[in-house]
Length: 180
Image 1 (cartoon, rainbow, N blue to C red):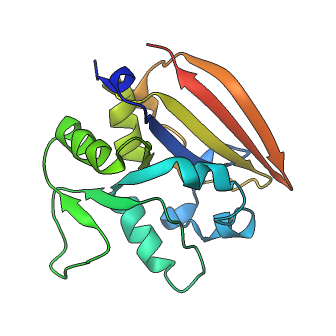
Image 2: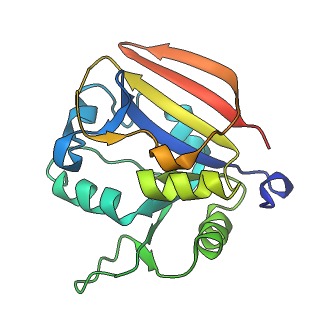
């Protein structure tokens, strides 16, 4: 069990998802998200975020989208990976430690703000280990038909408590507390 309740900031899984439950399309494509969500669509989320812990796959997908205007100022960025890239990237810190240490490192960087968890595998591992306080989902009006699911079948049951929903244009933001 984590110490998530002892800090002001929370650990929040942040996801954009198609209506049919995919967070990335075939080939881990995420460019379709920018058709619906911009960095300023929900400014309160960005303002509450102090750091991000990102999976390597999500980091690589974001790099492929670098030519799009997908800037998101979520504070310090940490990428959890088994194999840091050979080419340095001064915009992120690569972590090769265990999951709990990675969460603690990123939470420390977030200060009193939230730590966002991005990436299917990292988020599922954090949920399995009881490290997540909330899940935030942007439901987008598109059916992808294939891709990376919101959660892997191995995740198992996680009880959630809905506490907020907000509509902004075609996007619905849903928020859930993770019951512990």
